[in-house]
Image (tube, rainbow, N blue to C red):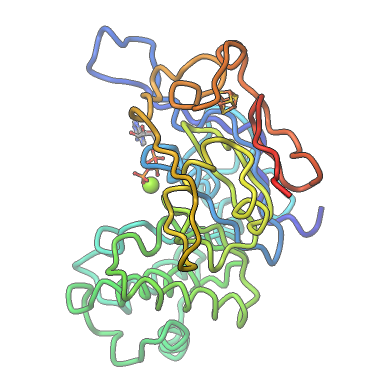
Length: 324
Ligand SMILES: Nc1ncnc2c1ncn2[C@@H]1O[C@H](COP(=O)(O)OP(=O)(O)OP(=O)(O)O)[C@@H](O)[C@H]1O
Ligand code: SF4
Ligand SMILES: [Mg+2]
């Protein structure tokens, strides 16, 4: 399909467990069978608790990590096995903005050098005017080129991270928790910047967040991850107004209701997220689910369309039905 910027089919990423003999042969199932598509013009919110596999999925999708199984297609081309210099065209189409701008910018490099790196990876030498343009796009200016990361605030550093990702004029930006390390007051500014860039440059996004509230304003579609799998996905309006998976419902019930007087029954999730080394049999959410029955332990439920919708899907034997 020409409009498909990214397609993941059956992607798994397992990490070996080292240094613990009793865990020999065990693996961390960080991503455990994910199908995921991003089309041109979409802003997809990828949401889940810490450890659910969001960053790993982002790294596999941008080919920074090889998948253990499954395929990665970018712009319609299968790039699962593409390596080295042949990855250049891939890197031009899809870029990753990292979770922690402090850690992802080399403190010993000036902003000019940082912005030059992706050009060089493409075998291109940028002009100063190109670098100044990039800074302007993210609300900074040419005088910042000679400065170093520590001279900037957290929000400005994330702007530099975004400028670096924009340098090769990608079509899709995968932003891994772009605002989670920032003060609340700065978060909205950076999210607004991303929205402005989307309108100006026709960008598409995957916005990773651990909180459904963060992506509410900007996402056109939402995918919810739990223990390495996507348990629900669909148009944002449908997922927020009528969550079908008990996990999504529980996450949303913890988000404060904006309208005064409005109430929502709060579902408190009991226990911790199980370890991805030994995930539960059947449905990965069953150890914390308020609706679990015996069948939930038998076989993992697959994503299936929610009643009355074609785009909204949930992986649950007993999904919530929309209340009319
Ligand atoms: N290189 C690695 N080696 C071993 N285990 C890893 C590695 N990278 C990630 N993991 C494990 O894989 C699981 C998923 O991690 P990941 O960082 O993808 O989650 P996340 O959803 O991005 O979490 P967070 O919200 O905390 O950023 C975790 O259990 C993590 O400890
Ligand atoms: S399949 Fe069962 S355990 Fe899993 S979310 Fe649905 S009801 Fe809960
Ligand atoms: Mg992460």
